[in-house]
Image (cartoon, rainbow, N blue to C red; front, top):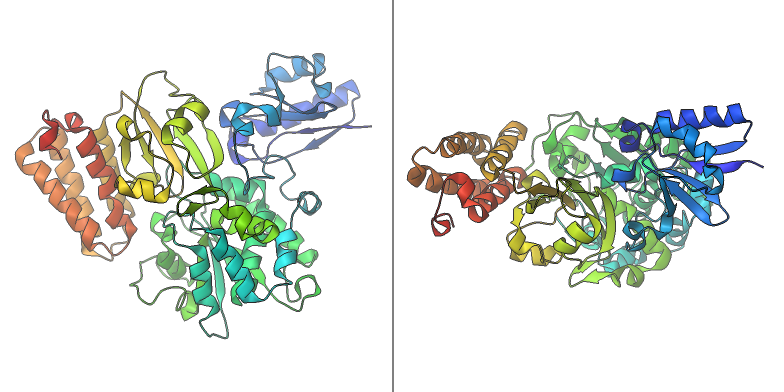
Length: 517
């Protein structure tokens, strides 16, 4: 009887040597005449422990990590295939505090299964949501999503049910579902983890969205930098078609839905929904004027649902367990769970899925373990390169859309990038302004010109030149960007720039904080 063990195929784990570990384990087992069943799973999201090897034993799934090729022989010598003691032994994986304290709904399967095994998916509650959706009227599917309180997890936090209801009630012979998988924010990787670690949950969520609004065609717009996700998605889509979960007659229901992956070309602006649609239509990724809204006139001028990966991947559990079940997690108007991604100068980098309401301080220290350098955490940027920098005085802010907005900050896609007290906030502000200048589509003047002038002004400020003139000028430019830009790229660039200036004026050469605010 063979022993089952798991080595991640997640691209982050692979970058740390997971493929080499899998090869070395298979080779060593063969040399010792031991029969093993080696499964490549997704990552659990404990990235400081990758490559993480798990073995099924009578006591449960025992984890070892971070494993290097040089550790493989000693692991076999320690009888790790039966949970033997070793310096890398971590115990039963589900009992580790980092995982045990989480509330994994969207990520319930990730790290447990073979990502492209449809049998694994079905044996772990997969396609139950779709099965329920096939029995419901369209309006009832939309109502379940509306009742759940699910809001857009890509950053805008717009109520998903309202968007779906608009598309449902807009007459058209053709409607579309677009999954925005152009995950480009710094410090974010939850979309990638879903696509690499549980692609069927995304496919199921997109299919349910199609049934809900009467769309028969879906597209996953995937960033070109995600080749592992591309491969996993295509493999899963092929199996979904073969098993009748996609196609002209989904599970004998007479309802059709088709799905394919389209690759972007690496433009950050194509993460904006209207630029994304322009790109899908074969055009240059330029922001469209709104109105009309994509829900009324979107892809090829037809009603279109555009949702983020996490939004769509959250739909199956809502249709499986009900909108009330999902809504019972969270606080205020922020319902359900959010996958938070810890990156930067943090001891325990990884993914944490929890209900809204946890404070940033709890996330940084209870899960993240503080800074990797051991120095005090100076600032945290939440929400990608357009997110504000939060100082230590704001670490007790609960992770909630409205609570963050009250501080003039954004929760965004849940990316959390940590900086210790050696960080130069003026240099970081310049980086954010330059990022906008480089990634601007160029359609609107405030973003195209303002970000370039802003970078130049920050260069002067960093040199200490005429601060009494240049700091007000920077604020004026930010005001123009904030109020005059066509989309969030220009409109939100002031968030990191002004938060850095307001909270850390000394890094800009301003000694009196009152002069900076």
